[in-house]
Length: 70
Image 1 (spheres, helix red, strand yellow):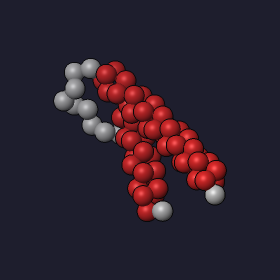
Image 2 (cartoon, rainbow, N blue to C red; image 1 turned 135 degrees about the vertical axis):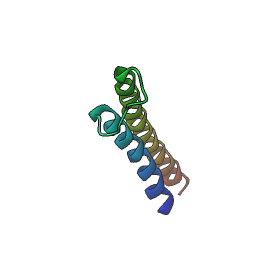
Image 3 (cartoon, rainbow, N blue to C red; image 1 turned 90 degrees about the vertical axis):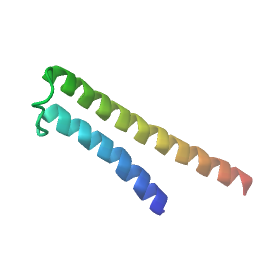
Image 4 (tube, one colour; image 1 turned 120 degrees about the vertical axis):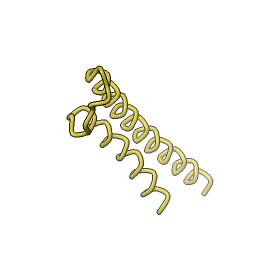
């Protein structure tokens, strides 16, 4: 159970980092191109959502395989 919580927490954190980058809450004075920061934010969001979906699908698959053994 703790492993599930950690997995979901990290994946949600990745999405939140993306949201922070897109919204501009993080100071980006060192970057010359602010559009690139927003692109990276979008990539973080998409990657985080992708990882959540893949993880949920894998958990369902493992549960189905476990039920078939019983």
